[in-house]
Amino acid sequence: MSNLTSDVEQKNHQHWKEALRANRSYMHTQFGHKGKVSIGNSQNLTSLSSSLATMSEIKLKKLVELNQRLKEQLDLNRIPVSEASSSLIKYITSTKDSLLPSVWGPVDKKDDPYAAPSGPCGDCVIF
Image 1 (tube, rainbow, N blue to C red):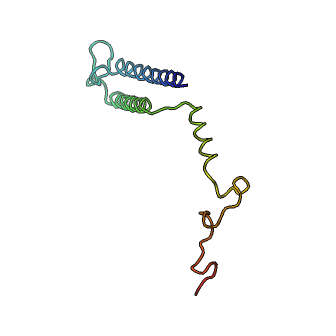
Image 2: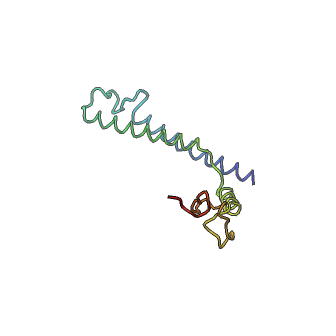
Image 3: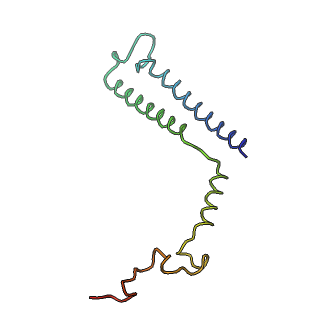
């Protein structure tokens, strides 16, 4: 099971690394090394119109944000679904739920967090 887990983790890690690498490559072809747009051989960002520059900046910002999200997803800890399922089943079968007396049996008032609080003399109320 541990070999399968490590294989799955390696494949997931490799997938995200490839996506990150592809995104970096795309950003490089679109914006060059210093955030400049490569158009033709000699034009750079300063020679373009302000609207094109603004659109390029927005596009660069979106790509940088996407790149950051991909990095965050790559750093997330992952577990196989089978492990998560077994953990959930273990929790459900071992945790007593006072709202399900048909499954767990009747619950004492002292153990029931949803029971009405009793006063100092039982159920009486002093005015």
